[in-house]
Picture 1: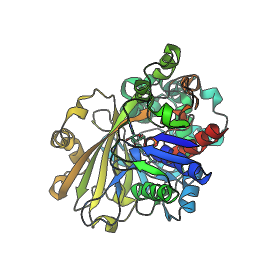
Picture 2: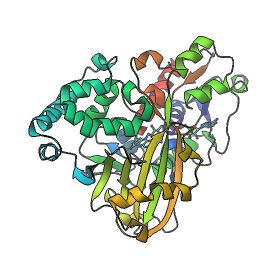
Picture 3: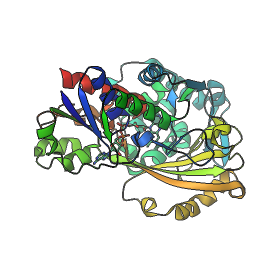
Length: 410
Ligand SMILES: Cc1cc2nc3c(=O)[nH]c(=O)nc-3n(C[C@H](O)[C@H](O)[C@H](O)COP(=O)(O)OP(=O)(O)OC[C@H]3O[C@@H](n4cnc5c(N)ncnc54)[C@H](O)[C@@H]3O)c2cc1C
């Protein structure tokens, strides 16, 4: 069978690999000049490793990703970097029972309530009762008014902005359930990992066309037996303008946020040892600071220290129209609240965007989620809006790539 795959992110690459291993012929069309999609990387002079354009790690229970890495002979490093929260001008540990027990901004009763509720979420497996419950009222009810107002509401506001009140509890459950204290990272970076999959695809006879943006879906039907589309729903709809209205209305009801990352390259560390800093302060124009070199050694990046300043925003937000200089100017006073002299050691910085990076998981999301099979004969859809209840991630992209192949071959 001849299969065309649109998109060379982790979903498309995995689907291609599995089809080739089963003896089918595969051609991938990718808009960008690199493979890896949202997890693709770049490399500065004197760096030994690629760096993702947006912060990336795996949890130690990301079984599909870890098993593909093993299959391709890629070493996976596991570490336990620290997670903190920035709150009321202070940076506080926020990644263990102990850190919650000594958390200064909540009375002891609220700390215990918060801890027990998180433990409860970690223990339960049946998330379906959360499908149609909103996250913020649930959190307020069980963790208490103060925990809600001090920690969770600012975090939800930072991540989802205008959608904060619509987020389903199942999204929050998945975030807590999946977290592991240890984090994993492929040696060489996610860019190198995606490149290894691409190399294996080519060894097996698959073709990958880079820099090939597909603008219409119709031309594929004559040349290929099956087409797998791994692009976001709004792009899929544009490629096939004659899709039934009901289907379009259903999948268009899924909203997306777009990712923004300012990557700072510094001579000195930005934070002492923190890897992940959640910003629970609604006055900040960003959601998270991630010091990659407090996770992976700076020796792989020419001894430089690397920090991501990240946010998720609607596509029309003014930040997406800014230059990197304008964005840094906007963020600078807030970066100085975390490290007042960071600018003295700033060597270089990059501004990357991730389109359609975060589907907004609202009530009864499952009913909005597209199926692999589409109304167009022999055209299959597999994208990051389809990994519910889990939040998007390369582990689920790999799993999705494998599952769509099963469906295509059925
Ligand atoms: C800020 C951020 C942080 C993240 N952190 C993590 C993390 O820590 N761990 C983790 O595992 N995951 C993380 N993720 C998620 C992870 O990157 C994605 O879930 C995963 O890469 C999705 O893979 P995909 O193949 O489904 O989609 P994509 O990577 O979006 O791939 C789709 C591909 O289609 C291409 N394309 C689009 N339009 C066209 C067209 N018209 N023609 C041809 N090609 C086209 C795109 O260029 C892209 O390469 C993060 C994502 C972001 C944005």
